[in-house]
Length: 473
Length: 119
Image 1 (cartoon, each protein chain N blue to C red):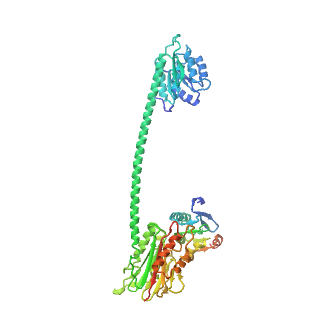
Image 2: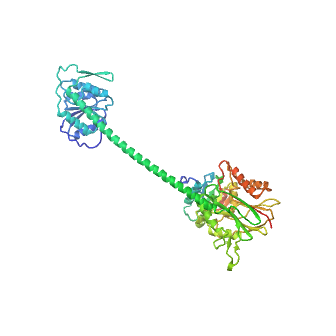
Image 3: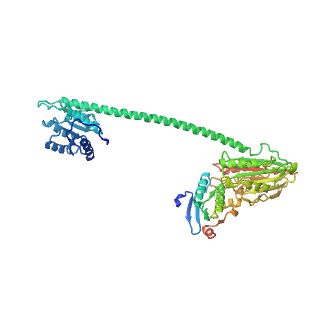
């Protein structure tokens, strides 16, 4: 029963006998009936209802079916078999879950059915129409009535024609009500289906949008990767009096590493490996920015070669000054905490004299043509870490056939599946074992060793290797 | 601010300093690094003259990008006139500090007791 206030105003104000075992439902129904102007007496089961009948004859009876002691059918049968009570209209409140319920009601002689759950107004309307046409008393020789078989059960229906008619109408009305409810549910379902379809269409659209931005991002990444490639040496590097080889493998589309080697003027060769911390777009953007300053095109913005004064020859900037300048330009706090390491060397090709500076970079590996290899560790901070520091210059005199290896920490710090690092020892041992091989072979084998070390997942860091052999005068 | 507010660090207070102990065994990916950055800056909360000790005893592996974060915290503490110390750094990680010379920049100690005595 709904909780809304009744809007139906009954035509009859009568005395109602109500049989209902649920206290809550009885109270709710009683309130509606009293509000509508009826007087109400309530019995908790059929047995009690019979007692109340005996006290005073009501104008109409509303009875639940499922009740302890005496159920609705039994109570109805008693009412309808008693000549002094049989003309009192009786409404059964039923769940009508089974056709047999209808026959049981007929057999018991009920006048009307109201199916649960019901609207109070609906019940009040039913009561009115029953009270409109008073029931005629049944003639005493009514006979055995008719026998009906439903679902294999035989029922003896005693009800009079008016009762059957009333019951039929009420069942029809119930069916109409249920049908209306079904139509409403159907409409609701149809609305739900429509909104589902709409949501689905939206989902498809969102998916397409994601797919499009994914494609755009992939395009952008590829384009950015191409820009980064421009920081690397030209395909065929021609360096006087030296043979050069390099490898560069970013661990993602975009890298923080880059390297290059190129002539600065007729006699000097500049070479560097740069490793910007982190990976991805921020690191790669910073690497491209740094790269713009590390160019051998003579200009005021190049940190490597400045135009000569008064039209004189270009001036090669000493390595330590280059790194100091970079440190002044690229402080980590101005670039989201990103810093970088660099090893920058300038080789004087005619004499084999190397000047170099490091900004927190892994050591330079020197492999002389004869004699033991050496790692040149330079104590220095990474670039961008500490403002206003001076970087120092180191020098190294090469002999013909000597080799230099510059690399990023992706080589010695390459980690295997157990997070064990490849380490300087394995790196130098490999390079040592390849002494007789061309520098190109050494660089290739070193990269292969790093990749093999990082199986099965591959390197977690960018890997850069630059190998240079000075051939002498 | 309760300890539960931090996922990546364990925060505790001593008489003369506050300690942030890294919970992670490995600090390798960018997400972990970003979260650490946010949590450490939130802990520092622009407090002037804070004494902060970073305890690395749980950390066995970290990427060199973590050094960038440490540099950032170091500079931040400097502008706040606070003191930053680090302790219990795994030998392999200490190698990275040495390589980048940062063992000279940072104040690094053997363990909590030694570091706390030096504040």
